[in-house]
Image 1 (cartoon, rainbow, N blue to C red):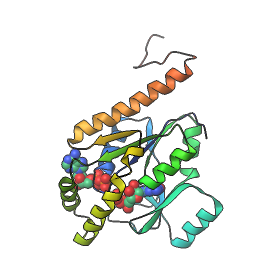
Image 2 (image 1 turned 45 degrees about the horizontal axis):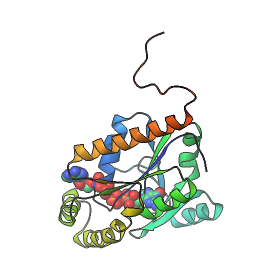
Image 3 (image 1 turned 135 degrees about the horizontal axis):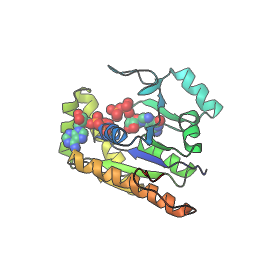
Length: 206
Ligand SMILES: Nc1nc2c(ncn2[C@@H]2O[C@H](COP(=O)(O)OP(=O)(O)O)[C@@H](O)[C@H]2O)c(=O)[nH]1
Ligand SMILES: Nc1ncnc2c1ncn2[C@@H]1O[C@H](COP(=O)(O)OP(=O)(O)O)[C@@H](O)[C@H]1O
């Protein structure tokens, strides 16, 4: 499928820093919007329906799958998550850029549908640092952390299928790398369409 907007897909093992990095990227770049996924998992703490996720029950998710409402969906850590057509179609058609924060299975499905999608994988600098970040975040029990560490081995093995790998050692450096990838993609896109010049900066020569 071809759309006017740029589609960025960010995946990472749990605890690598994906949510923090994408949140910071969105604050810096008003032209990016994140897609809100559907999930069957229960909301945590401050999470709100329609903000972090659309929280739905299993029958609702089943019905959406049967209707073909999802571009992709996957089972992750025991729950189902999916990107609905509604979540991204209108923005992309309008030429706006969208970020998907999804797991590697979903990312690879999206690449099949949108060949121009830019796939970015966030890696932690080491296994030990990944475990420490999961512990410091304080959201998960020791058993859940060990499960996520085991899943991380499987997830990291998929990184070579992505367009870019960003190692999140120093947060500000990784954020800069993400900004560079977004910028490079916009330049590439504009260069391909070259019917008019690409303008950088706010032009005030009226
Ligand atoms: N395939 C797919 N994965 C998703 C989607 N939304 C979220 N995920 C992934 O599901 C995993 C679990 O997310 P979450 O429950 O928020 O917990 P987290 O791992 O602590 O961030 C993460 O890897 C998310 O990127 C989606 O729409 N599709
Ligand atoms: N570069 C970094 N250095 C140290 N801690 C980080 C870094 N990036 C993220 N963190 C912290 O690691 C934890 C996991 O980050 P989070 O964004 O929730 O990960 P994910 O969305 O990938 O599961 C959070 O407590 C976050 O503040």
